[in-house]
Length: 221
Image 1 (cartoon, rainbow, N blue to C red):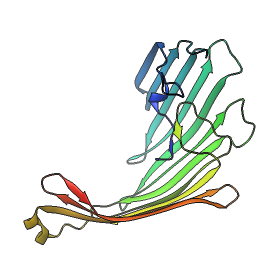
Image 2: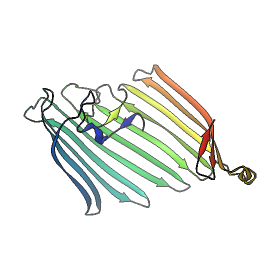
Image 3: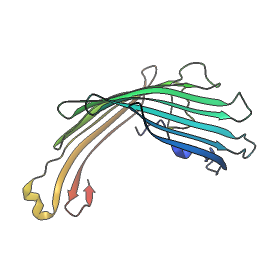
Image 4: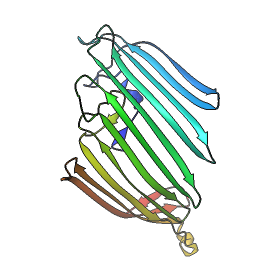
């Protein structure tokens, strides 16, 4: 989601001010074992700008279930070297279920641990999606607690609940092909943000039409 990337690899080796942090070393693991798909990263950065070095680790486990569906888990951590008071850990689970009729459901729930917060260290997202050749629609909700922290992710704000909708159709009228138009895509996207008390924080409504050409280009109005 554009409001929360659980793992953003560029957070390793880049300081909060955009400066480059030296990376001392690391390792990466990918593969399959016991019916599980595995992925992992470990990296250590050197001390820089008065800040200690850090150990970063990510472990992702996924298992295929049913037909075209999967369940998974993720663990992420940042531990300052020789400083037990500076750390951040994130644990989470997710699932993707494909139903008949081009419908799928995806959801995740994660919790974080950081010495800066006692409560509100969670985030979740759930959405229903239908992706057809002619008609598509996605709707769902997500929430980030006040204390959610993720030093290996990217997010714009905490203490917010978001509702979203993305709808559109993709007609391909033969009569438009003489003008080089392959597909017309009228669409609507709607985002609504509340704080955790239920008061509105922001909202956004966008509608438009995109024309896709046989040449591969497109124009949006």
